[in-house]
Image 1: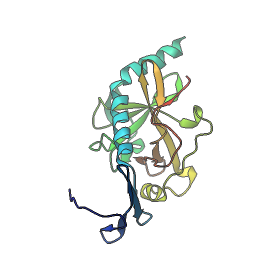
Image 2: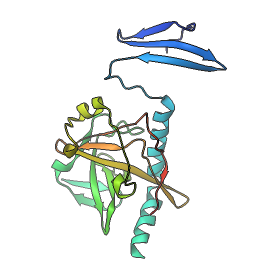
Image 3: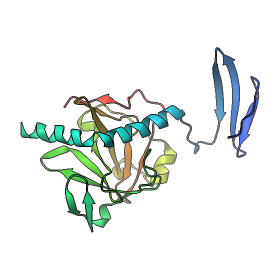
Image 4: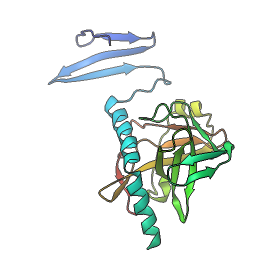
Length: 75
Length: 138
């Protein structure tokens, strides 16, 4: 991981076409602006983590789920 | 071909129905080939069964059977990657889970399939009002 310090208003350029700019720092929250080609997907990391966890969780409980939906059918 | 499945033991499938996930699925990046299997007497819920690992099977729904006004804006680059040019090319499913008898659907990350080319991707929507665990009344 590349670690560097930036001041408000300063930017980083990734791969020549993605610009990450520090817009504001306030109370531990950093406001970031990102300029990137439309083809570049930008997602908050915790959302990806959440979806991964939910897939794994879904598989863990799939036996219960199958039982529950097939039991309903018999009613 | 004949595959081993989690719930139905050996099943004969039509190879043309195998859906290829180039990037795997979030949390299951190493698995690329899946098939949708029906559940007897249940039209609304299907199995997304891994061809490569028998134990890997998730239950999925067609969202509009449960959430009539489900609205998704699929990023163009994801649609291009799947070769999808129109809604007629598209199949959408959502993974469901259960916790303490409450069944929820992941409406934030639909599984989108090009039904002609059999390519799929679980697309994470970054700008939605929906929940990873949307409670289903069923």
